[in-house]
Length: 169
Image (tube, rainbow, N blue to C red):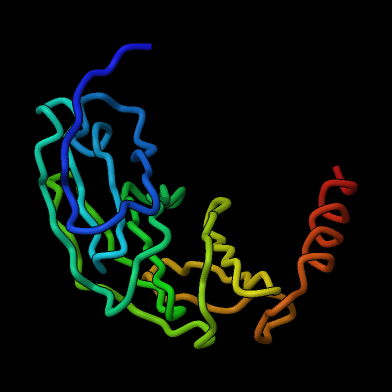
């Protein structure tokens, strides 16, 4: 492995990175890389243009710990989801011209968030000893998942839910 470049892009530590999932190389979004930092910001870069910064987003009032591009299977929209340590989720759509919609924000629980992952349109937040499972809707709003009520499951309950779903296949 050889070093390609080193770019100082945030004022504080970078906590997470994600590449956009678009496969069509004619789409400008297929090249995007997003980063989030303890400096409360999210930045989007174009790796094909020497990692030029194309967007600087300041939606959060605390350290941003997770950033994910989510491909909407029902449209050509790409969503950019970020989560901060105060439990605030910000969702924006990004179009083919790299224009961002206004953020839709939701305070999930007020608990400190440590990590975030996604599966299709689901968002999983690791908070203290819980996993919060929520779903992204087509209008970028976020709803809690599981029987229509709020979801806060212990890690053991989450693992059991995953095992039950897998056993169905």
